[in-house]
Length: 316
Image (cartoon, rainbow, N blue to C red; front, top):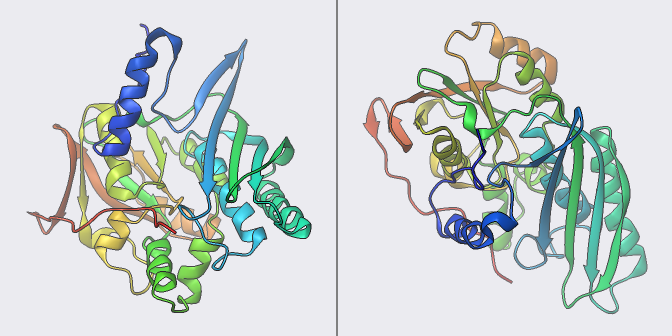
């Protein structure tokens, strides 16, 4: 069976634009729609992803040190490898900086990128450096995967699980934009997100049928799984794990979490959450199920909820 050019995506203007790009590419493009491109090299499979961080859209230099800018940019790309259960090999970075940007800041930024790569067993393989009117960090992540776990594997009756606690990045962003100091736990989730590489391997070993990292927000990313798998994802709001002071809107709509949404079989052992917590020191929480239909439904005791607002990048 020939794989379609684009794995179906969820709703939203950004994804409408992506759909139009792939439509125009036609047979000039191959694949697309998952967190990584999967390139077959004989018996081996290479997982490749790219992610860009732009000053004024994804970060501000008054909020983050150069090292933190590099860490966040690298974490975003490496998180895509986690989303298909790939093992990282390395990263390449193209870095644009304004004229006069301090040389030691350039070095510190790249050291931050190297640190997050090293934290998951990867290295910096090279890159490019150019002049730009603002800081731009584009990271390509390379990984190896034998059996990629894609967005399209969910089926009716499966269960939905999420790693960690959600809502921290949007809480930190709201406080920073207001000129306040965020709570330490929320700020750490914003400045130093952790790619869940080992966690993805663990989930794959426990029968995970679909994975996605939470870069666009839980509601949007669950929508991608639903679209790719041809099912509906039903999330119970009261079961979504929250960081302190976060509400369900922050958890459902806040982007750049880089936790994992996993689809597991209905007969997953009752010990799964406890085993995961003992292994990684963070929660794995069952938040819903997969049923016939389309899209994402968020409920509270069976009553459909309407979420307010949506994830946005800030503007400088």
